Length: 308
Image 1 (cartoon, rainbow, N blue to C red):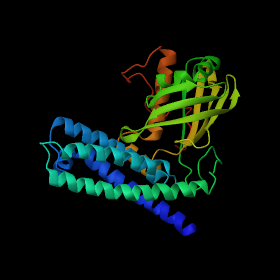
Image 2: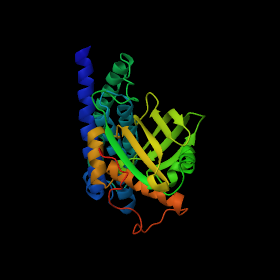
Image 3: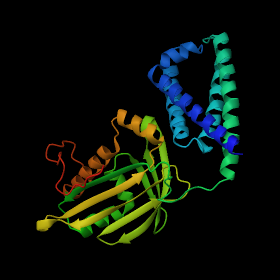
C-alpha cells in the first residue's frame, strides 16, 4: 500500500511539472505550439492557446503544491477532454494539418491515460487517510508563507475595526480579492486571483473576535488555500489614530513553486500586504484609493513588525 501511495504522489508531481512546462510554453509561444500541432496560426488560435496555457499552468501548480491530492489530477483529466474535443474539431478543418493534429491527439490520449491512473491512485490514497488540520489546515511538512505588516491609520480603533469587520469591504483595498461573501456570523466565502491567471476560493471561519481590538480567522478543512492569521487594532501613541498589525500564514497555490512564480510576476506576498495596508489607509482617511503614491508611506513604518 505504501509503495502504491508513493507512486501516486510521484506520478502526480511528474504531471505537475509537465503541466507547468506545457502551460508556460503555450502562454509564451502560442504561435509555435499551434504550428507544431498542425493548427492554423491566427489571432483566435493564439488566444485559445494562451487560455489553455493558463489553465494548464494553474493545474500544474496545484499538483506540485499537493501531489498527494486527487483534485488537481482530475482537473487535468477534464482539461484533456477539452483538448481532445478541440483537436477533434481541428482534424475536420481544412485549415489544419491532419497528420500533425492526429499525432497531437494520440499524445494527448496517452497523457490522459496517465492522468486517469494518477487520479485513481490519489483518490484511493485520500480515502485511506485523514487530512492534517493542525495550524488552520497547514501541513506540518509545509508551513507555507508568513507575513507580518503594520501601518498607522488616522482613525480611531472602533472605526478601523468596524470597517474591517464588515468582511465584504476587504476587496476595496485588497487588490487580489475578487469578492468576500459573508455566510453567517462566523463563516465567509472568499474568491481571489492567483498567479498565472488562476482563481482560488476558500471558506474562512472567525476564531476570535474582540470588538475594536482583534479579529482572528482560519480556513476550514479541505480548503484550496489553507490559511490562518489575525489583525490587531491598537491605539497609536500621541492620539495619532490606530496601529493596524496584520499577521497571516498561508499555503500559496503551488506551494514553494507557486510562491516563486508569484514573485516573478511581481506578486511577492509581503509586498501585496504592504500595498493592501496603504490602500486601507487611503480608503479610511481620504475616502478612496489615491493612484499617486507620492504622499503615502513608502519606507518601513514605525509600527511595522519584522519577520516577513
